[in-house]
Image (cartoon, chains in turn blue, purple):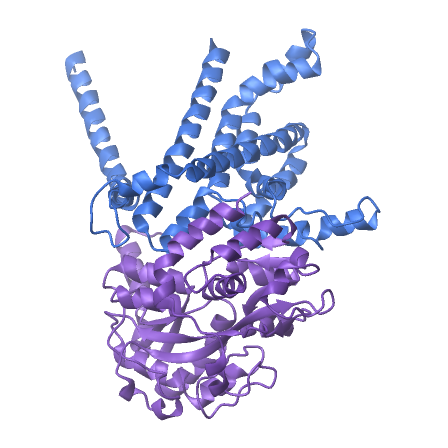
Length: 294
Length: 340
């Protein structure tokens, strides 16, 4: 057999393999197009109607939404809520991931189960549980009153602080799972090597562990950000309706006043603004990764 | 055991085929009806579904949805409704009517028609329950408020929970509050101005669905709501009493409608006939469901604010044809005025 024939056969195999892969991916691609792209295009098309009956094409819904300064505040507040939740989950989650690395395999399994456990509960149940915890007569206030720390119950529910606290717990698995996944693949000898070269524990953390765990950290931040900015139930039940975020506006426009073009504009604003922040976070993640490799 | 492709396909086909078997077993089919989540869903699942099965051999499938969600889903379905029967309050009812979402209703198909007061059916549906809106408060923590105006005064205001214009009871209550300060059915600005003055003191501003939970947890101790919510909270052991405001309680009727394009119109009529029947209404009136009946043969519960349905003519009623066009602007205004 000549080398030319062998090459042709190999290429032939590769071609058929590629074809098979393409065919295998086709159902998923079609499902993706039907269930994601088509509704998205429909959403875009709906936004270009002026009236709630969706009869008159135009830009009036866009003009109305972006002509109202209040909606800029709503967009900013939504993004800010996501960023605050990301910061809180990083502050609480990262040390937990470090603890996880130092545990025995058996204890790691226990901690992993504890991390995953909140995901086994419905988000509605978790959210209502936070009413019991943060309420005027809730666990926190009763404990502080009982200890004599406060004389009047604190207002924790229906505040942004209360919302961020609860979202931190609700979204924590989304931060920890990618973080642990990346950190558990780190070579444990790197820390010893760093220490042997005279680096303190803090220096090892910031110059070795944090940069190497950056991909997991960025993935966790993306998931927590996307999830917390769209967490309608938590935002409205724990935050109340004085804290106005985009999901509440979308719900009101689509299911209370039935102005679907305005709801579509608000939805697209949410998608675009969240994707913009996600793209920025991804860019930072890639840059830090390149910096590390370079 | 080794599975090959043929045996796997045969197994999957058999399993898929088996899913049709319950349909074959249902001699007279089914009807899909919406119901409000919570007490309505519990009551209809426990009381009405078994009665319908026993009386007409029809399976009742319940879709728990708020009124606005029903209209939204029916509009989105564009002529292929995901359910056969709507249950609606006056505001969403008018939206459904304007959207042409209901089948033309023939009241003569209801065997129990004579048991309803005059005017309780029209060419789009039938009244199935009455609702009375007023003030609920915790008698262990607050004195009884006399009227809507008290809600904005101490000691009530610092324990007050409010909702916006998303629901019938929220909108109606804010209209009545507005009237005290010079507003009207179509002008709620005075209520928003007065609420804004006391906003920092107000205990909770929440979604309607969250209010009973917030009351139960002591986050607020006074709120506007309907008699049914009060009765349900009482049934759960919550300290709560209903007050009919001195300017009059608000009343409205909940109606049911057959969805346009429904595939089970015959069964839908049988379902509606059962809902207004004496046996169903009597059972729904009892605790823990506490419905206000529309059937003339069913007496009202002793702790209701009226003795009979005729008394409700003296209660406050709102014209939702005038309210609906203004509601979107009111919701926007409420958002802006109440936002932190």
